[in-house]
Amino acid sequence: MVRRLATASLIAALGAGASLLAAEGATGSVRVRVTETGSGRPLPCRLTLLDGSGRLVPVTAGKDPWLAVRPGVVYTGTGEATFSLPRGRYTLHATRGLEYGLATRTLKVDSASARVDLQLAREVDTSGYVSCDPHIHTLTHSGHGDSTVQERMATIAGEGIELAIATEHNHHADYAPAARATHTHPHFTPVIGNEVTTKVGHFNAFPIRPGSRVPDFRLTDWKPLLAEIRATPGVRVVMLNHPSNDHGGFIPTDPRRFHPGSGESRDGRSWDFDGVEVVTSAALQSDWMKPYRDWFALLNRGSRAAGLGSSDSHDVDRFILGQGRTYIASTASQPDEIDVQEACDSILAGRVLASMGLLTEAWVDGRFGVGELATGKGAAMKVRVRVQGPRWIAADRVELFANGQPVATRSLGPGRDAVVKADLTFTLSRPRHDVWLVAIASGPGVSKPYWPIPRPYQPTRAEWEPRVLGSTNLIRVDGDGDGRYSSPRDYAQAALASAGAVSERGVGIAPGPLLAALEPYDTAVAVQTASLLHERGVKTDAGPWRGAIDAAPPVIRHGFVAYKNLLVD
Image (cartoon, rainbow, N blue to C red):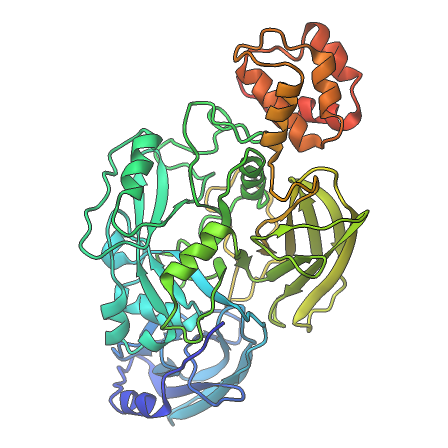
């Protein structure tokens, strides 16, 4: 995280002109000032007010441009807020996203004015990263939700988002003027983007040069559509949003058009994306691992798309901005001076972490981090995984995946008051072939009103377990020692070639030589091989193929069976 907070003199000048709009039945006003522990600097944040029954209470405030107010919620973009409440006793919580702690105060409101001073302590170390929400909307520009562009500035600053991507529907929005007008501009760098909203999916594109033409969102063929988006001046990153959501009867990952095991496109679409949302806090899945499994399938097919986290928030409070977010490797020292091109370079290289409450990092042999190729020799490799989160969030599980298969799992003890939830080292046998590694940490979902995890946007089952999440992106391991990375798809193609499979129609492919060529590899390579054979019209569930696969080693057999079981004809 990088930090520059508004000066106390600016806050004092702004606060001096604050007006108070008295609500019917309100008998007292409250003035809150929140500062950062240690530095004493005013801190943008979210204030949550609850009555004795734990319910959000009516709040009335003036029209201060740096505030966003909803029942029981006040976002302040400057660290100060003045508002009125009915007479009574309340609980006041102050938060600022997952990097900061929780400040709580019991508040009595009567006819006299109350002054509350709170401090928030920074708890999570995000050195070398900036926090980004790459999927942000407003009522002003997207036409639904309830957050005006002015209110959005308070929520961006108040949740600690440092790189804010404006992705209004088919509209190029620039948040910079609103940030200056609300005095929140020292706290983040705004970026012009666009959620290109079509009948065949939603795609975020950024950065965009001011004044550029809006892409033709009427196109329905992904190839010309993506070419149109990439031709927009300035665009360097194109991401696929909420890939399992149904919009207008179209689901990108519908198994009739996308194989969830191999990542193959069954209707000829080119999945040429730089990023895919694996966490979308306003569009959660009943099965929260599904977006990860779909991403894993794409990676095994050779995709370089980064796994990204975002909020897709259109609201002040119903869906919290920045609850899902991405941490991007950056050398920035100030939040309003982030090098957007450097941030794009990091996304394209996979030097990013996805988060919804937890920050998960990983290193191989103490040297290689996300986005890097881990080289080295020896029979074993050590994978360190560190998980952080504020004290008010818990983690209970860490899982390490290699080519999409779990290879190490650790349950975590209570440790609720710890910031470092886990710092583990897994010792793995060094693979004989290249693999990619991803670590995912999770924990019980937050239900408290100051940061509640929302229910699934389009539920697919009645039961649901809310979770907080944090995941790495890829660390690629050079297992075969050739100095470069080969995907499972690359190995599958090489195995077909070594077995003499030169025909695109499957003529002359014998099961024995091909299955023997697969023996050095893992299930992911077997799945990709099954996919290639299916493309060539080979029926692997009949004749000599079926007997040969049944007799193959379990790793190979499981791959072919998994491919067939997930194939929807």
